[in-house]
Length: 310
Ligand SMILES: Cc1cc2nc3c(=O)[nH]c(=O)nc-3n(C[C@H](O)[C@H](O)[C@H](O)COP(=O)(O)O)c2cc1C
Image 1: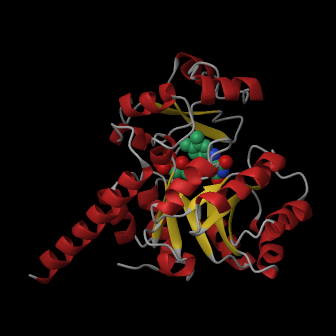
Image 2 (image 1 turned 30 degrees about the horizontal axis):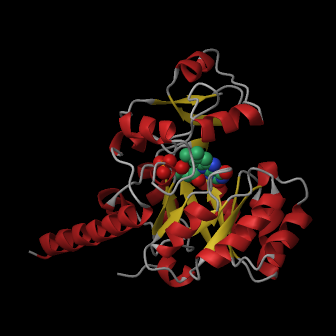
């Protein structure tokens, strides 16, 4: 089965791996691209020197398609970041956490395919007006930075897919074939997986975080900084439950972030995770996750098609 996303991005499986600061680097992204999906390299860490090295590694590790995310909130110089991705030979960019009219035309002028990440219909229409090639529609159940008033993927996807011509990718709540089939039925041409890729074997984070995702129930996340904004969907820990009170939470410093990410101190920072943690029970290789999800997705769609024609 092909979709507009597999055709446009020249991939076999319509799964984009979510950008994640310090995590979405060559080890994870190349595993996703080699498995037939689309790996993404992050820039939200702001460490462009390290990212340059990751891009060099990507060229050694895969000859498949991959891309880069520009989280605009962390971009110091918009001109510099466009030059940077262009110079690195990047062909696909997702832009997020910012105004789509700032970067879209300059990225497209240098031949880059641009998808913008949107949490609302209004933002989707603005991105389309800015000329994006596609949208990543982010439901509030997903992990990471979130609009606390956001809608879930099941509401947002059909709302946006029926209002725009460009292809839509759903991010938030997808981990397997059943959720992928649902996303396609809702009008999406592909999915973006964050929490599932975070907990995969090739993800570089400490096993404590991966295991906490596997142990979590669907009710074990919360949104921090609801009042302060932006909100962050994280796993419940003693620290995050405490910080939730009052509705404002200070983003931890870099040492704390790295202590959580790579030393496994779950109380040190904000362990981003989506509600879909409640459906993830095993640390598995990326290739297994993607292959099983795509096989199951196609089988479900086929079975539903057969049922409908009976
Ligand atoms: C650990 C983590 C870090 C993230 N960092 C980013 C980021 O740097 N830029 C971005 O656009 N989205 C980021 N996100 C959000 C993801 O791109 C994605 O939308 C979300 O994880 C999808 O929902 P899911 O977690 O249910 O799969 C992050 C998510 C997680 C779990």
